[in-house]
Amino acid sequence: TTYIMMQACNTVCFGARHQTVHVLPLSGLYTPVRAVTAPWRRSKAAAQPTGVLPAEHPTSPFHELDLEDLWSGIGKVRVRQHVNPLRREHQIPTTSIDWAAAFSDPTRPLVLDLGCGPGRFLMLLHKRRTSPAPSSLWSSDRLPGAAQGSTGEAPQYNYLGLEIRRPLVERANEWAQRLGCSSQVHYIYCNATISLGAMMSTYPGPVDSVFIQFPDPHFKKRHHKRRIFQPQLVNAIKDVLPPGGKLFLQSDVESVSIAMRNIFEKYAGDAFGLAPEHQPEHVFFSAPSSTTADADASTATTEQTASPAPPSLLTQHDVQPSGEMSVSMSSGDESEGMAESSDSGSDDDDYETMQSEWAAGGWLRHNPLAVPTEREHYVEQQGLPVYRVLLTRR
Image (tube, rainbow, N blue to C red; front, side, top):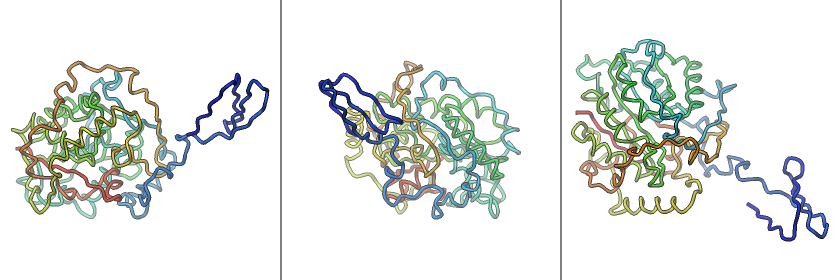
């Protein structure tokens, strides 16, 4: 960015399309100055880490969806990278869903992805679990939730993504329609934190599994109450998951994964336990005494500056495959339309530093679903770690 210090100047005129800046000093001298392209107008490729390929690249796991053939007319949407869920318009719960319109058979076991972002993950999971024949949801070949006690045949699932950004929901449903999987894959615009309990209470079938993957970290401590994982959501998930149901949590920000794991242990430790997948040969552990320091450092850094997080700290929703979306960088979420409740997130003091018995189970090295999200694909291309926890409903 170039700053032009204009001393003894009384007029600044901008040329056509802001290509030049004409400075007219008091002396009457005419000085054309070439304008520097603003940061938000620079090519997105310039900000892309070297060697990181977009979601639609032929080597990407999402390429098998062939979404590039369906791109015309729906490929580009305008969304905010970060959304404040405490704004007034997001504080209206979504309670009434026509399940018969959403799914061809609403009695099937339901797979829930909370904060699903662009939505490719559920479409790819559905494709891999139904072609060429239905298969178990989990790579361990153990049928979770409602599948237990069956004859051994893998069930058909319904897949539901909940997302707080309406344009992504509309595009994902259009993709599912064009791919021919809309009878089993559906997306709903809502604030999952306040809507999940009432919404799922009317679902005719069982809820098999719940995923919270790469949620917006909201690094600043005063913004932790904006995170999707709040006590209200923990209690809702505890209520909707039957015994044997799975809860999968993951993030590439270790402090966020720690907070997610610990909040479930604090408010639902009697209802959940670590899944059998947490075996010594399949997990890794955090460096001693590093997590607290990292959390403090990230909080201190974000408190001092309003700059965007570096690529390694962005969320799944921040990943912008080439040509996918146009992002609004407005910071209006900080103040406009606020409706923050006094008790929302008030008990969020020390989730990242509380003592955890589940910490002894470590982080899963590999995704037990063997299907990545867009953010996961982006992170793993850079060789960065992902911190995963798989819990089972008792």
